[in-house]
Length: 299
Length: 332
Image (cartoon, rainbow over the protein chains, first blue to last red):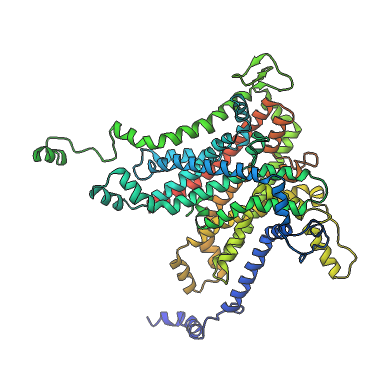
């Protein structure tokens, strides 16, 4: 004991002295000031990242002449005229097509994915992980490689420029996300709750309706919103498989450019308009967004 | 009554021990499979069948402008069987080779830059600061804006040499320092690849940030607490505790990001149309051109198969990462 003490003691006073003196062991590590520095950096980067979105919205409110100035005129008068002009150009029909394709495909994907997720979690089939990874692997197939046969089949059965073609494709596109998300939500239901319901004599449908549904409804809503986002934003199939009747919002947006003269403010209004539903859906689902984006791998 | 019940519950000594509960009767197995079937069959029909057809078409000499006399499943006439000829074209044609190189350059630079930016933002957002929730919400916005819309905004509202925001800000700064006029830079024609990459980095950084932030927030707090008590510096904690913990999240975001960015079509279609020349033509866009501009169905299908194989290579690693996160989740 006495032989050990001399070798260790020189370091001890240092630590002892630093502890009661407060939390300033190193120069420049003042937590208060460091905190502000980090916060400022975080906010500067956030605003830089948000700037293009902010600029899009601001320009959409300006007149065309103010939108095309250099240097930019930040404080030009604002109005909603551009949005009216966008609707005058027939945006309504395209938005309605997008809404139909997204909502119907979301309902369909949930109708298929929820029972599937049940068979992969609560009463799992054998080798249920294999089935999970099969669904996941379909998400990794590049859609462009399937475009040609899909185009040929759709043409042969006379379903070009038909909104239900997009509905079917978007349902398949979102299936892995929906199955993985719903599986992860269903798997979180404690087994005891289901067993207790069974003991109390609740049948299958009653258990589903009054026990399972309330427990998974936040997850169901988040899954629906994420499927809606991906369907709404899809462009490649929409532009190649639709024409005049069932073209969706992104197709409208691309066609918007060919106009004459100044168009920037109206373009910004159209871009804001078509992005608005997804921005709202995304902000509403932001807590669950990461689970959807990582296909359920990250919670 | 009671005796039959008893016999079911307690095996008599001369009976073999009950089989493990895992083994299900064949009827039970099918009842369990039932709810899965509609989704499974739908997915197989809509996603797997087209790929089989793509493989079939890739072995044909089929150009719509030169129809032959052989019919392909009632979908059109092709000239002749090509065997692996289309694949030889894919690997020797200079346009397609350029497209392969462009795809790799685009994917790697977008994924690496957005991953690093996403990591920086995630680390910043992991600390508490005033308005953190609002900042996080604002940062997600670039990912939510419709990709076609953001491509158009970058092209016209930001990159435009005459009235775009970038040159506008340069002009404003130059005038602030007394210069007559700022530089006029034509981003899209001058540096097309960088222009596309920048727009895509902006779009994908929130994706990376969200996954990495989830990773940071899943760190066990007691370990960090212990490290702080041991007077480890912030840098040391990051290097020796946070980074190793984040490794799989970094892998996951990189791999998922690669798979998605590999498929980029909207941004190329909108910002550069693959040009100037073929400077920004990636494989998806080149396949699109081969299909709907040159009408070379066989070649387009062969290029499609090559993209699928490339994706499968990346996806194998992605699946392994997801699988390890997944099994860890279920062993807890």
